[in-house]
Amino acid sequence: MTTIALTPKRLDIAALEQKVKAMYRDVALEPQGEFHFEMGRALAERLGYAPSDLEAIPAPAIDSFAGVGYYFDLAALKPGEAVADLGSGSGMDSFLAARKVGEHGRVIGIDMTDEQLAKSERLRAAAGFAQIEFRKGYIESTGLADESCHAVISNGVVNLSPDKHVVFREAARLLKRGGRLALSDIVTEVQLPEGITCNATLWAACIGGAMQVGDYVAAIESAGLRVRTVRDNPAYQFISDNAQGATRKYGVKSVSILAVKE
Ligand SMILES: C[S@@+](CC[C@H](N)C(=O)[O-])C[C@H]1O[C@@H](n2cnc3c(N)ncnc32)[C@H](O)[C@@H]1O
Image 1 (cartoon, helix red, strand yellow):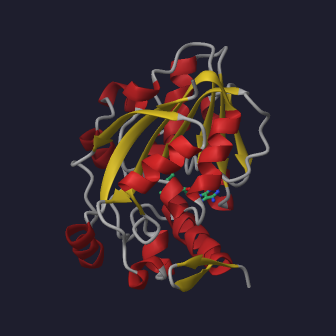
Image 2 (cartoon, rainbow, N blue to C red):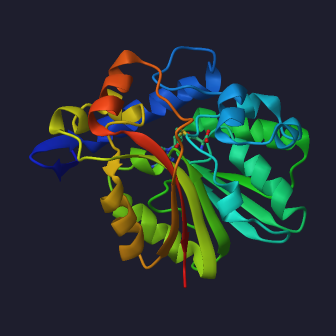
Image 3 (cartoon, helix red, strand yellow):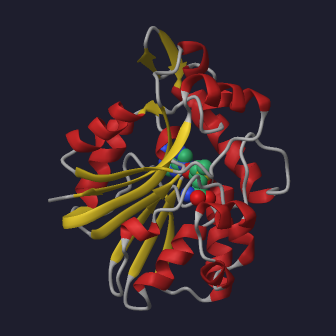
């Protein structure tokens, strides 16, 4: 069994991966089901996505949108750019990024959950987004080339990783000089207690793995990126009582962040 120390108890990483995959298999296949978190178009619009942008991409990708904030204004994607979407899910942000980089740009969506990948790829092929490629992989080790991206984007994913430092080092490796990391994610105001960090179900629901915001920013900077913006997303709220309790007690919240590889 692979474990990492999460002071002082231990979290079973293999079990966590299976929980996360099961959770996001359901997100892909049954977006109308019951989750700790909100999903879909109403959430996307509340977070700041423009209805006109959402009209232009496949609707089933929006139904399974499980992001936690809006960051496209920070990412400032331009025509012709190459973008990696870490934890692309059913593909909503990859489709939006593809529209911004245009037919001469490139978007690579990376996700480890087969059902999410199958859904995003089916939608991509049907809608004819030739500039997107969805690949199975881990955000800790994408397999993409060094300095191959103008931007790395991610929404609601890094909190799910047992080692955020590795993810940020991977993002920094992928970025060209001057490239941007723009993401939304769940963080906390105070360090979560082990009763929560060792609860794989709360972890898979985007709460248990949330890092204290100062540590999160420090992890990005220690990967060699300069954090330019940290913005709260108060429009993002968890749904279940369990999750709302943790939110009140520990300041669990969504932020959008821009960091640059100088
Ligand atoms: C909360 S969902 C967000 C999906 C998408 N970004 C969105 O906004 O809808 C998290 C996604 O990250 C994927 N994921 C979680 N941990 C991962 C990892 N270590 N490597 C690759 N994918 C991961 C899950 O399979 C899931 O599709």
